[in-house]
Image (cartoon, rainbow, N blue to C red; front, side, top):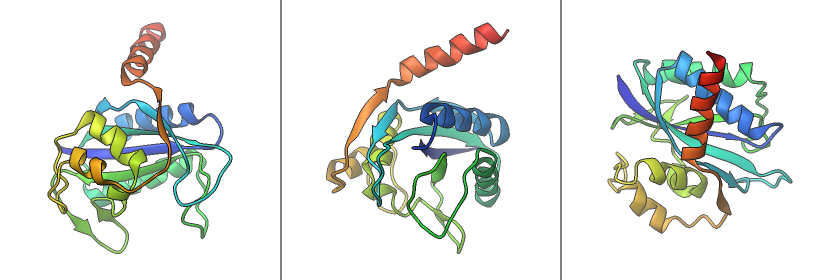
Length: 178
């Protein structure tokens, strides 16, 4: 099993339901979600939109290879209604990115790990630093907390729902489902 860090985000429809569904699907189709950050409301990065994103970072233990994990994520995004266009940045019902895959570095035509822009985005670094502040970026050789201190992103990122509240909801839901 490899420890991976996954970012989820949504700014279309029921944003919280979308990232919750993505978390649950990753847990059942890609491995075991062992931890999740709080959910943050964030300004869109790279484009203008009237609707803010909700973002969350997950720790996922997986036995899938990076390519297979990426294919699972792309299938999940498609199942959830994401339609890709020629635009790089646009509103989306769900966006799931592999941030880190263990301490490994991958650079292929279809997949780059670590995520090539994660160190530029507060909406990734803030929730990642919440759950893994001492994690070292395998290329930059800096702790996530250090990268966050120096990020130049000025977009707004604010706490929307705490990780503790989400955990209570998850455990409450599973009790009522029994």
